Image 1 (spheres, protein in one colour):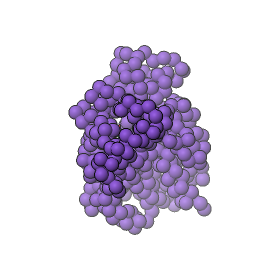
Image 2 (spheres, protein in one colour; image 1 turned 30 degrees about the vertical axis):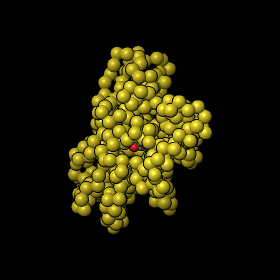
Image 3 (cartoon, helix red, strand yellow; image 1 turned 90 degrees about the vertical axis):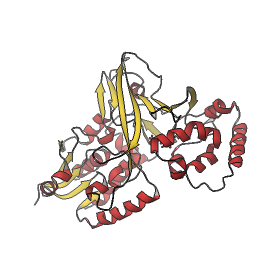
Image 4 (cartoon, helix red, strand yellow; image 1 turned 45 degrees about the horizontal axis):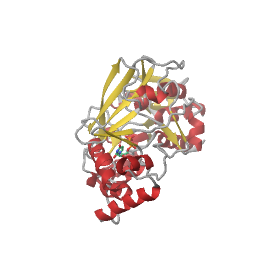
Length: 374
Ligand code: UDP
């Protein structure tokens, strides 16, 4: 008999949801994380009453009723609706691509005029079947929007030319011929009131958590503690990169506390030109309408400039780069993972997928259901 039924490596969303379900099923669970806090990349830190998204903006949105019902049991969500502003050399545009954007770009007023403009640019570019992000973007929104709002941002974000990136990345963004500038199509959207850390604390309520424990450094001793391991770190790191490293993008943040109540008037401003070195500036207080937990105005503000770069071992990976090369390599790691008897791999890094938070929760719930059925 080992001390725990499950050792969960990583206190991010996947790990916390699985842990909660396992505990509910009467299992003994230990959660470890090499960082000194819980929450993984959704962790929020309190600064002057502002919940700062330490690892980048996280806006919860989902169409999955089961996920929404589940997660709202651990946090109340506010009514935040993401609507970023694009700044292209000082020209401002509304995002995602909607009638507001088309009007600002071309002065068109009706959906018919906007469609005609895009169709004209698409024809001129001569694209039939889009094969990459550039072709996909031009066929969706035309060359002007591609050049001003997509190309520079995407190449900064991914460090690769748009012609070498999968079309799927740009399909994440809505294109609408209406005056609706909600960035997401999801039925439910919001930010957990009190911050994401509090939500994860609730998920992990009554569960033993050890921070500052590096699983791969003490694998043998830790494996001896539990019957099964749920591993949510990077799959290639687990196998000591034996087949080569998967590629990730990482983000560096320059965060500042400012003595002003309002820096940019919006939670997210994307700098879509190639010349500005950062991809976007997040002003954290606007995720919660500039109010603290008691509903008071906050006279200060915290902003984060985000710089995207290629990941190297030793720093935090953020975005899997799901191109053909990496997906093929991932499948090989996946085959190794299938042979690891008592280990479940999950989450954005464990499954090497560009998952949103709701998808991570959905995967964790499904995994728990299969795993804990008897
Ligand atoms: N994107 C863009 N311009 C923008 C915002 C996004 O071209 O102003 C593209 C970019 O390629 C990005 C993709 O759309 O990688 C998906 O954006 P999303 O906001 O979903 O990325 P995330 O919030 O996950 O960083």
